Image (tube, rainbow, N blue to C red; front, side, top):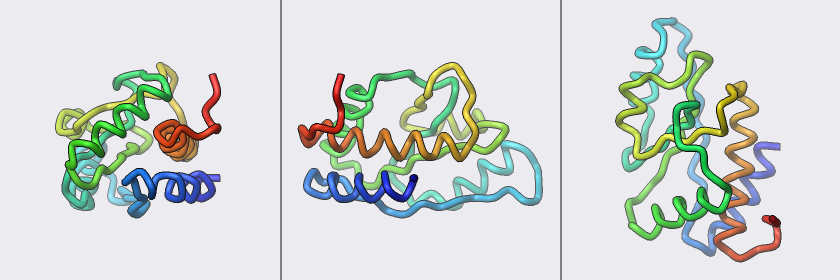
Length: 137
């Protein structure tokens, strides 16, 4: 399901100046909590702006997310990385460094479900920006 939405995003987004880089998973096998995981994430960030998915973040509509994604593209800020934290969430220092924190609501979601939801919202945002029929209100 994730791969399907990411393929759709890539196909729809390409003509809009949006493209998919890579999906990277960072595993904190040594333990050490959120701070250690944040260090592993920082080491894998390609540079540029990153946004985090965090329950303390901004709750927004799908068109609002599309607007933010489009504005990021229009600024010409380069690569945008989306970060989903582990079971303990996002380290506060990493969250503070992020360009934006986004929440899927007040509920906490399992990591893999958050990946599906984010990949679907990326595709939906590209469809909204393209004026496509996928997003209906």
